[in-house]
Amino acid sequence: MEKKRLPADAIRVHILYAAEALLRRHGPDKLTVTDVAAAMGMTHGNVYRHFSSKAELRAAVVEQWLERIQNQMAEVVEAATPADLRLSDWLTGLACIKLRKVVDDVEMLAASRMIGDEMVEVEQRHIAALRAQVARILADGLNDGTLPNAEPVAERAAAIINAASRFFHPDFVLRGGPADQQMAALSGVVDLILQGLARRA
Image (cartoon, rainbow, N blue to C red; front, side, top):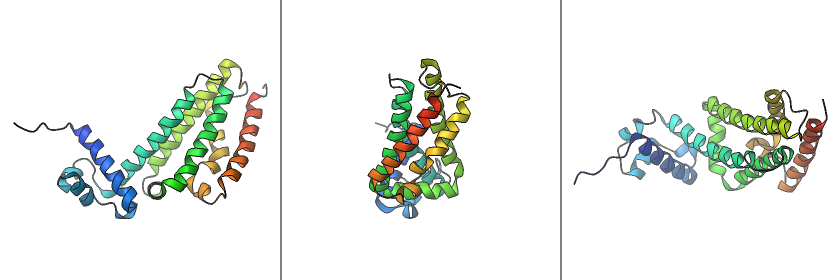
């Protein structure tokens, strides 16, 4: 019986997960198309059909990883709680994720920093997605009355991300000291943001 061939999209997904496992094991510098192909039992030419270079493959792995973070934060955005509480939970939750990544996901963070230099558009898309999530919460805050000073929403969302970026960027988190001190500092920033947004314009 002829073996059923997987669709191209499914093969791409399998390649990405194999590449992610190898990146975590050996680091981003040692991730090669040849090693990924060998891990999957295919020729490197098959991998090149989906990713034109080692840098593109590495970027796709990092983008998939960043999308999982975005999906975690989307659960906070969709929660059935007042918008001001969701904004606090979102800022605190993302900071906690980034702190854990610094300790538990060193190789992936190294890859993320590398991609920030090689393919800046990956990081830009991630930041844009996070801004959109904050903007959604702010729009909800206008509707439920908990964040009456959240307009203009897009500009406020960008300002919030900028104000809290020290707690999200891996380089700053890595050098920011003990986790409890970082979270205490973030709490002050969150309080300031909420007070400004709760003030009637």
